[in-house]
Image (cartoon, rainbow, N blue to C red):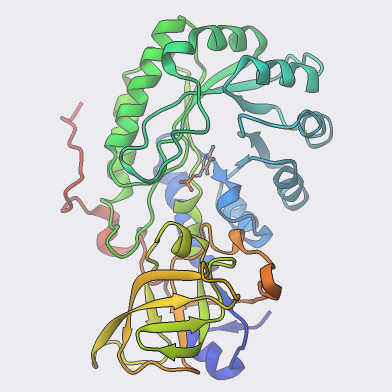
Length: 399
Ligand SMILES: *Cc1c(COP(=O)(O)O)cnc(C)c1O
């Protein structure tokens, strides 16, 4: 693989006709180091955000040892890439054959669940193993997150006592986990969720060994600029320390987006301009699923254009397939005079970008290259490392 400085150097050299992913290993390393050093507990990586073996390897090298996997294919990918990693099978509804293969062939000992049926499945699949860590997923609100994860999984706290007690009997190690929703825009999301954990622990009178606050840690996008992550960590730490758990209880988190968003950007080519609509060569069935289906506004720039001068317009995008739904409303702000043949770089696409790509309509091919310039934005450098001048900070009195 050839290395380029940035999108401009790459498009000059290659004039690519297919979308190109630009990977920034240094950015992924920086994010991993930040979580490993600063999170007041253990930071897992949620593989579904981006299962690229190259990324898995980088995270491992920076000290991420535990990986949240949700399917048997993710188990196989991580195990093949990282033979010594600890795999945590955190999908609360698994297939029996997958539990069996994960336990027997890949050394998986950590499973999540949110029902008695799933507990029985895990017992069956592991043949009543006594070396299990079982994490009971509770339902928490998604009110502070951009993407809800409140409907599908999680046992209601009011109904969680029996499951916690039964899991406690089966487990060598008992955890409670939740997910506040993706791109949680305030640390309060975790504070509220941890209060649900308190209620669950008190209600079931069980000893809990692990509290896993899940994913949801934000990245930075146009109009979605969070306070810095240290505010999240402080709020989580204080609330965790106050839970009715033993001193040896562990705190875990499992970010996907926050560890992978800055890893990649995407270079696309404009094939046609029609008014303020640009027809580009990637879209809703490709890397831009979130831009199409949930209106996510990724940062954009025209490759090689002078960003400081010239006037700009808000554009929407059509992807390459013959489908009206292959549409991304934006608005994506780009130079007025952009036209067919120009290239656009779309930033912060490392999370839920390439992972979502399909082959629909014969598209979906792309190239990948490493680049050395900085991502379009970063939570891990400069001012963004300590920002409290946004309206969603939670202040805690010092302990
Ligand atoms: C998707 C998912 C994550 C990662 O969420 P992000 O919002 O990307 O941090 C973590 N844990 C579980 C169980 C998930 O399903």
